[in-house]
Image (spheres, rainbow, N blue to C red):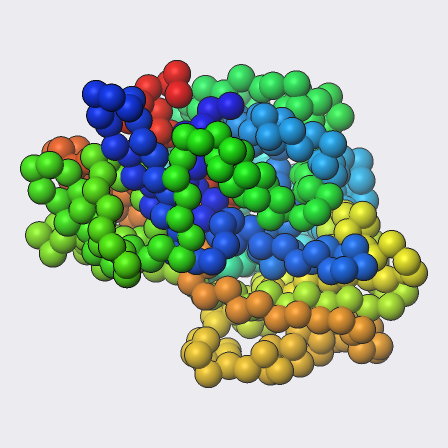
Length: 474
């Protein structure tokens, strides 16, 4: 088990490391909340039903996906895996809600060759044209601008706008393609074409050897996976492992108030005391870290404060019986259709194992707000759960034709949950790390604010931070 691979990134935590001639390494994890796991948060009802209030499925593909599955195997969770293959209806059927109706996203050869609503021409025409588009000259570009230039404005307005809302809860016209979709940016830079980049590869990837579970995911063609007791099982298993190892000291409800640096190292001020450390790996949100750093680190503080976040309302709904008019993973909503509603996930389709075992039911999750939260709902402090629930159930009725009322619901307001990688984000991150290196600061940055917001990205960031400090043999 690569212990330092997993200690930091799945919570709003700060990890301290102290070296001494008598004990090779002392690790302390400080978690500000009452639970470990950050946005991996599952409700397990007494009747066996499981509802996710954050991520609900993890992609297994590529080195970052293999890295996570290697950890799952190390923790002994293989038998808890719920895989969803590419042949599953939840993988093949994804929808867009445009012009007041659901449209299945184009898939297969027919979906590429023929015109499929809501698009006005075959995707093949956009793909063929893309190969001839000249390489961009800017160091960065918005996602919307990049896709408009290479694939056409219609795809950018509908599909990419919706995708950015589903992944980042963000505005494709403000998000950076270089930071949000580096494989697209690199494909253009290295191959001159997205098509050629996908066929030939578009740049270096992390060096991760797939273990047996990751190899199984490739053999069985997994598109995504979850865990039988919900994804929160992963940080809970990590916590149990660390506690039993005796090599890591774990603290909950330990909010970092202030960080002070002297010649002898860090002094970390908590509400109830002070901890000393030689090095810090921070997975704190950028703004939380900025408020704790010494005022003398003004350049670093300003760069951290420039990383904004958005709030998402996650409304879990359960209905009696089978109420879906279509089967698939769910549907996304472009901002031109409804600025406040990001999308609806049909949870019971990919993961029916999370339904209550007795009686037929349908679980849905409605996502709302994001970059448009305040515009549509006002401030998170003033909006009520009743208002959010009413908006969510009305959307399900309007989009899916469901006239029944939910038999169970839960509203989770996830404040500042997704960092927004706006134009120039890569420069901010490079500038911060250059500042840390130039000033020899015993500080490493990990977590979702820098190099990717997915579960896989966040976990690999913890591994990268640890290997940068301790080497690849940890």
